[in-house]
Length: 341
Ligand code: ADP
Ligand code: MG
Image (cartoon, rainbow, N blue to C red; front, side, top):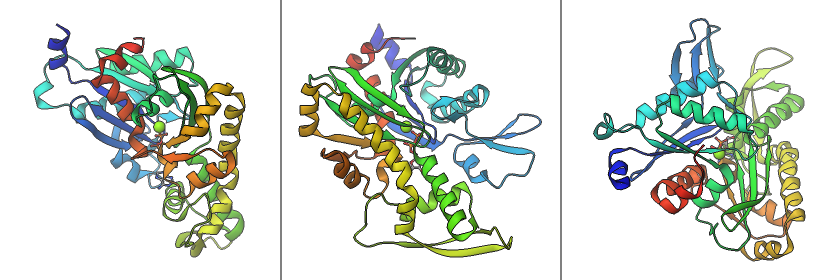
């Protein structure tokens, strides 16, 4: 009977990230990764674009259009926009074969720090967006399953997920979270730090999108074998005119220092609280980094230097969480382990 239902339902794993939403379709894999952004008309509230299309509009919208991020600091900041976004993505991945059959089961990852009220809100949003059954999984657990850590074994595993709005970290053993921490400091904060730095040093005003490009193109956490440079354009705050400056990777590293320290201090705090038996495992097995922040050059070297643990970057870190939700759909043992809301 269950098999029968499974055949007729297009089950989805969803990573509702602050920066990107990813969708996994059971039997298919990761089919969608788009920015968690919705562009709406300010007056009529009509949705004009979602995802990639909406991201193109950020910072370039006329006054009657707002490009908003429904997920802020890892929680749903705007329920209506979130529901519309979810519905849009779910419709986008719907296959013709399944269109008229059972509504899907969904596994959705949520930040480990959210309250019960927020959990219920996520669940209701998914039900409104068309789910039949919704299971929520804490993001670090999904990330750990996604990167293939042996979470059920009696060993300590350390997962660090540096996203856009939040950094989540956890020590996991025997299928449960032993310790966890969620920071509202992650990729966006790095972009802000770059904006501040260029403002102070060059009187150059740049937007969020440019700051992110700089971080991705020449950002680093640890000295590079070959340092990089990049031409950056923005507005001169004194003259009020467009201006271009050549920026060096050393400067961006300096700009990112404080944000990275916050993350490293939190990792150290967790390590200090970790029960000694598990600490021993961590020395052996190290720490795995997932999320877009794992792609920052040299982040593994810096964290290794500051914690003395072996550090690994997950394969395809941006999809680690959604692949974890996918594994939960594919393997009933994982699916059963998590309560329905
Ligand atoms: P979330 O789970 O919060 O949606 P993601 O895991 O999708 O976040 O990561 C998005 C963040 O990763 C953004 O802040 C983005 O700027 C950052 N990012 C993406 N690629 C890189 C890169 N190559 N170097 C540094 N940061 C990156
Ligand atoms: Mg994430």
